Image (cartoon, rainbow, N blue to C red; front, side, top):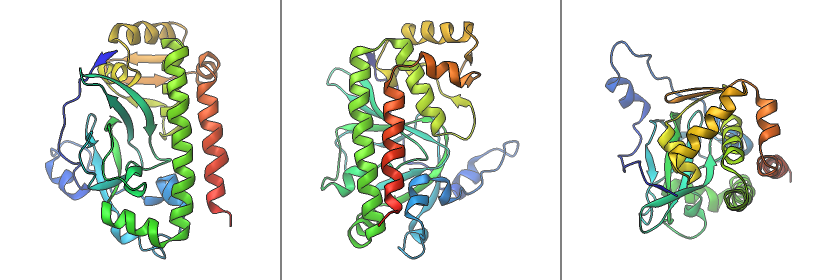
Length: 266
């Protein structure tokens, strides 16, 4: 198991603040569209349910801690181009990922489950943008709106399925298979075939030693499936990557595809 390598950091910056902090040579940040988060798109009619005005666009830098173990959650986060990893930490600093959340979901499910905190830590594994909403507004929407409640409950079931499948995968499958699964799940939550992530964070996410990730990535690169450079992974052959993955990736994707379309049905 790996040791925790990502230190706690402050909350994500609102888009407008991030613009002012970027240098004049960098590309300006642009506000994302709430409909780029598939969970918000499933809910739909955000003005009718009172959520559009309560969504604040934010940037999510690589390594950003969105929620800390044992600390009361202040916001729910809806990624649009970022990916967040839920990590479980042990007392001696070891860690492992239990789920990844991107534009298909929301970080902050404990807020609607009756608790205000969680033993896991949420860390941005792929930098990007998204939206946040206060914990109070998130709970209020869940309590008052049937479309919100139905969608979030179905999403919660899908997230639980991912957590369970991840536990099975980490116990029974090889590091190369786990890496393939993680890459495919990440691609499903991005609009490109490039994943911007450090090798340390990949090892932390999989709960394995960095050397194991290095060897697995080099094997995939030699086979022509990925291009692997410092801080960047580009998937070149998704079909072959899926062929080398274990059944866990397909099981998680199938469950999301089965459950989330139900959100729009009466």
